[in-house]
Every structure is written in C-alpha cells, then in structure tokens.
Length: 175
Length: 198
Ligand SMILES: [Zn+2]
Image (tube, rainbow over all chains, first blue to last red; front, side, top):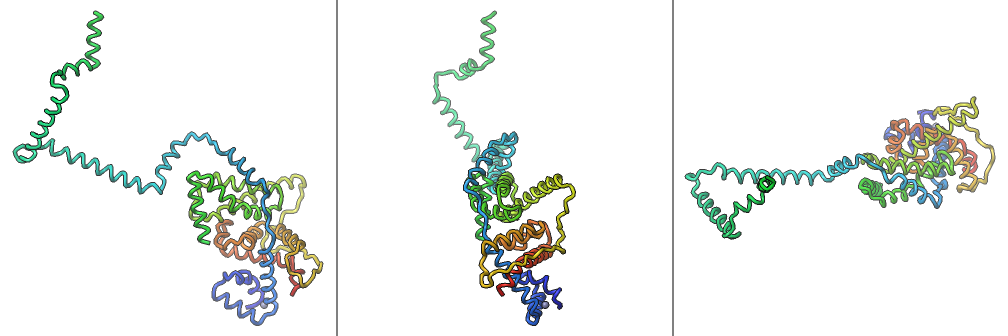
C-alpha cells in the first residue's frame, strides 16, 4: 500500500480500531516507510498532549446557582398528577407484585364461588353428611338468637328502627 | 467502566424515584467534565457555565424518559452537544446580523487548512507549558464543529467510538474519519513543537 492509503489509517491504528487485515498492512508499511513512522509518532504525541491538556473547572457558586434554578422548576402545578401516580403504581418494578395480587384475587373469588355452590344445590338425600352440618348450623343460630336477649321481641325492634316506620308514625301524628 | 455505569444506572433509577440526593450526586460527578467539554467547544467563560447549568436542567427535566440503553455519560454529553450547537447557531445569527457579508465557516471535513506559526521552541521541553496549552486550546476551538466534537469526546473526555456514534448520530466510519481529520489538523498546527523535540 502507498503512503496516502496508510496515513488516514494511522489514527484508528493508534486506537487499535483497525481490522486485523488493515493492522497487518499498516505494520508492514511502517516497517519500511520512515515518513509514515514520523507521522505516527507525531500523531501519538499530539494525542498525549491533548490528554494532558489542563481541564476547566466550574466556579465555586455553580451548585448554589443550579439549585436555585432547579427549585424554581420544582413546584410543577401538575394537573395530571393522578395519572402519573397511577402509572407509577404500574411501573415495571411493581408488575410482579400486581401479578401476585391478581392471582390471589382470582383464587379468593374462586374459593368463595366453590364454597357457595354446594349450599345452593345441596341434595339432602345424596349428602347425608351435609345434612348433619345443617342441623348443627341451625342449632348454633338458635343459640345465638337466644343469647342476645330472650325477652326482647326482635321484630318490633327492627320495625321501630326502620325509617319508613318512623315516617308513618310522624304522618299519623300530624293528622 | 462497567462499575461506573452500574453506579450511574442506580443513580438514574433513584432520580426516577424522585430522590433529589441522587441528582446532586450526578451533578457532582459530571459537572466539571461537562463544563470542560463546553468550555472547549464555545470557549471558557460565563456562557460556558450557563450552558453547563442548562445541560443539567435539561437532564433533570428529562430524567424520567432516560432509556437504560444509553449510558449516563453518553446521554449527558449528547445534551451538552446539542445545547452547544444551538448556542453557536444563535451566536452565528447575531454575528451575521451585525456583519452582513461574513464568510461562511468552512465545515468541510476534507480541506481544513491551517496557518502554522513559525516560532521555534525549546527542544527538550515537551511538557505542556502554558504557551502550548493555550495554543492547543485555540487549535481545538478553531476546528470545524463536527471535527471538534469528536476529538473532544474521544481524546479529552475518553469516550469510546460507540458512545460517540450515539452522541453525534453517525456511523463508525464517519467517527473514525472525523477523528483522523481532527488529529491531523491539530498535529499540523503544533508541528513546530513536535518537530523541535524529535
Ligand atoms: Zn508511508
């Protein structure tokens, strides 16, 4: 290869960014071309100088100034805040939690559904065991009723608590 | 490198969860690098500091939409690059309003011609003297914008080719050839230093 083909490759050659084939070509050329060797050395030193060039640093009040500007931005009157809140609740990191919660929900619904089913469609003759359950349940209910106050008439108490009952008595009074 | 970008990723996640301390840490970590880059692009001074602040404000406002595909490094330098380009367009417009028949800046990557000063320097002293520092800085500022961006990001900020491709939105070949042209231009400009110390 000629020098004018090699020279543009020197920059990438220094960065080890040439293909194996091109690297080999450049190496071979450099072994016998003094001019390209000189270019390579000068470019390497240019890069070294750029690397060592002094760096600028921000002034001492940079942070304070930036904080002031940022705090002016802070109170965003965001009318769509609730949408953001909602979308935050569904951000990717929380998706597994939502998945688990919905599976739990489905399981609960199914449990309730399947628990009710035998009660509705129960056949006393085919399920003698459930019959015994019913008897027991009825006993417990009975005990509970009697435990409240055996002397109180429940139906009267309910009637007086009902708004329509009160309304009726008011209407009667005004007449 | 990966350790740094992992730390950066956790900082971004914390920012996205409205953690103000995390953003302050990003500022602390990057302010001087971004400022240095902007100084070398538009020249040091009050403008450069304002543009650096603007970079962090824009980052702050957009941190929620940050894609983890990019690195914080790449993202911040991309914002800074765009801010500098906008700024320089504004400056150019103002200047062209003042002097109506101003010569267009040669943005051509191929034919960048530079005047080489013919002063001679002390051969054994290849340290970065104040003088050489100044001359290098001027050479960088004089580069066409496209060449300067690439050489600043690679040779001064130490970014990889792939990161630069993302920042300037160009294929690898373009990044390589811009870097070569930029280095070659700087090399010619300081050849009196380089020759004198061989
Ligand atoms: Zn040659």
